[in-house]
Length: 67
Image (cartoon, rainbow, N blue to C red; front, side, top):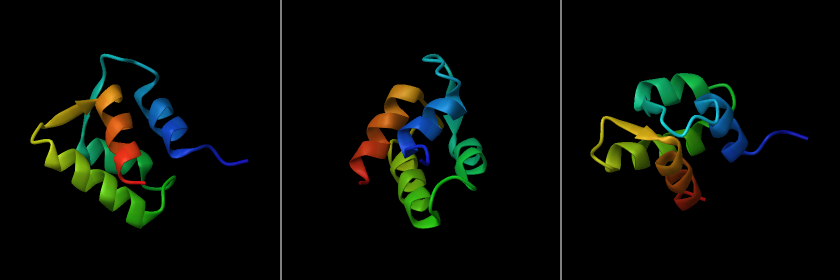
């Protein structure tokens, strides 16, 4: 069974609530694990926040909104 997008994201962040990743780090970290169309939507959502980097909670919330 393949991990969910949320599990992949949590693994990327190392379950660290204080970690922040920018879009380049997110794209590189998830490129081989998410479908390209889903990854593009996720990155667009992250960029839409106006923040240079997002924490795990924000990233999870954004990921849930693109489904």
